[in-house]
Length: 247
Image 1 (cartoon, rainbow, N blue to C red):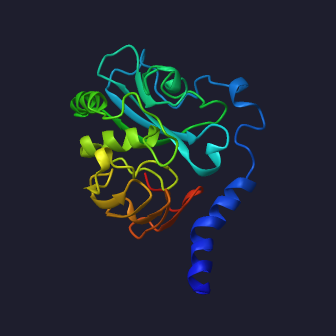
Image 2 (image 1 turned 180 degrees about the vertical axis):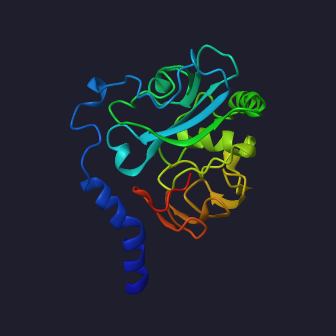
Image 3 (image 1 turned 30 degrees about the horizontal axis):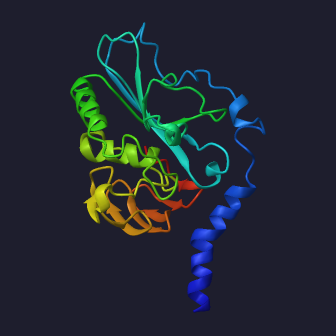
């Protein structure tokens, strides 16, 4: 019993405590005063003719950032003069605003002071067809007016939905993308977001995922611990991936 308790503490509680002690990625600036300008991670549409799909992640706002990241997707068809950004937000939903938002910010902007990092960058031939599939997936999201930070549906539930509908993207969401394992309509079985395996999940609170790209992940109360043997790494709750880059 004590061994099991220590194991659970080490795998699930300790990483959260470490995350709590890490420096604030926003440098102590209140989120509503933090920068939201472009980072330069997206190419300039004025000089980039090819089609582009990018998926970004950044620490969630306020206390949520201890546990989770916020993810979004930006697309630019061939020859288009601008990107379109799709994401799910909780701001204003209680007052009647939609959860799915389009172009609330630029494609690569700081997420309220936190610099995002790229999870996916696809360009060139074949990407226009993927962009059309992404748009269909956005329209088919089953929770367009609902947001719940834990266990979902939230921004990571939205990105996982798009990834499952467009498996050619091969998006592998980090272990600290809380909400990615919340399956729509009370589902229990689904493809892994990357499309390279499968998962079993009970309301995003308890489950297991096994896939070529994600590796093995065990979800407990929305927190995921995993091992990636293909690109050797530990995947920890709150902290994310430790080891070889997974892109």
